[in-house]
Length: 116
Image 1 (cartoon, one colour):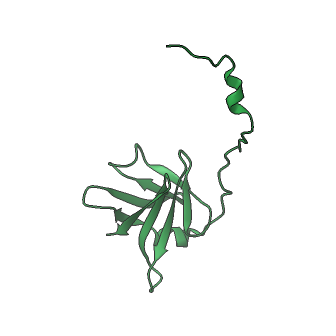
Image 2 (cartoon, one colour):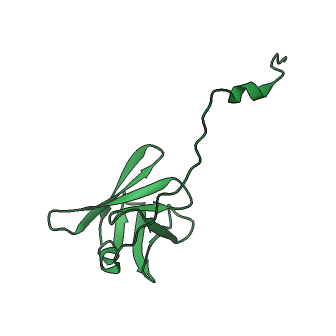
Image 3 (tube, rainbow, N blue to C red):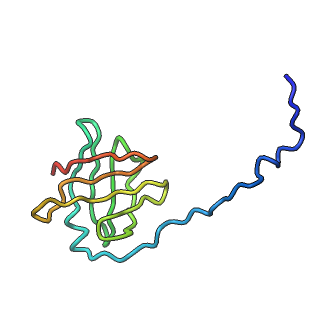
């Protein structure tokens, strides 16, 4: 096998690289955070439990997360995981109570219905 390319630095020409930055974290009242607590399910095998600990929203899932992790608020309804470019939106029903969360990952949206 031969390779006629002697200088691979040319592949970087005319490319623009942007430094990734997490969105700014905002303060969300603990009473609002407590509205989101409960168990959400994508299907019968995939569930995530949302809790509040020391004024912070936490997520835990035996099937989708390695450990319990803190969620960082970008708004009163949008939260980020700081270990990957994954964020979620809590969706409220007509009565103002959360009915599901939508996980946004790799250009896809995953609905998780609140079951508890």
